[in-house]
Length: 403
Ligand SMILES: [Zn+2]
Image (cartoon, rainbow, N blue to C red; front, side):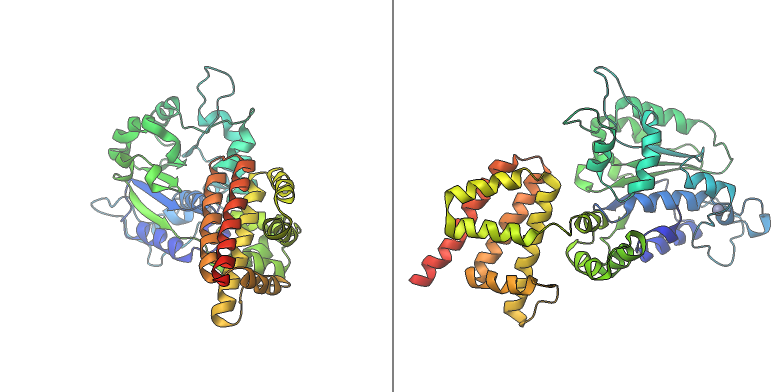
């Protein structure tokens, strides 16, 4: 994977190339980026960049690139900075297929048989497929792909840590650098402490790239040993362009989806996939059940949404949030820049049934509900509780108006 095939993130790409160019690379990097920001593809592209023959100057001593870790007497640095891997040299070709012998991968795995201790290498075929099809995917997508039974938890096992230590103590095959890309070090548990020594004093020319979403869930002992590379959420315009060029999304839908996807390309893809879903109808039905038709209709609606599954439930809540935000903007500025099609009418109606404080309270409840859905809350109970909360929030306004 080359930098050029990664969505947006121009500053991070430039920063990484500069680090190499100026010999300021530490032996262990922590790429920290939220879901859908592209932290994993960036790490893969960076690994390829480090081994690309055009960048390292291999087979061309006159254009020799910089030493990775600031050797006392660096090889003369090429005058112009190479900003991307070439994509065609033998090293790039192997890296592209995730088959370079000096690029190792580590990621959470699931236990297939009781008592078995899985390691990443057992899942390498699936891993290559995952990166090819869904490099912006999250841990949930990966576990869905490899699990054999429900409620499988992804873990990076103690045995995997031993494997890493073993692999990295071997000499590199090609004579340059060895890179280990570890995805989701959040799933290491205390096993990760086995890796501290090798992260702190790695074998020569070895680079660790840890790719995490949530710094607080990574062992602090590991975080403190890493150079932090922050990967921001994607820009709206980058998501819009990517949807059109990579996913052949209709430009009007791409624009709409990009504006509500929170800089998360995975989310954007899912939203496009479900763009045909009629979230507005579902929302209208819910509000009617809450405000007019009462408990029987509410129960029926809750049954309906609890059949949809977590991903769609989250999208629905996000869509409601989006409409509420547009309603707030409409009230404050007289127009709703992110409202498309019939959304403006809907936002106007939301302004009639709830005041700004009620809308704020609803937004908070929806965010909280999304949080619990992500953590496997029971959908039926959650939407029942949410229905009652919304009823009270909106009723309060009505009571207030009558005073
Ligand atoms: Zn190359």
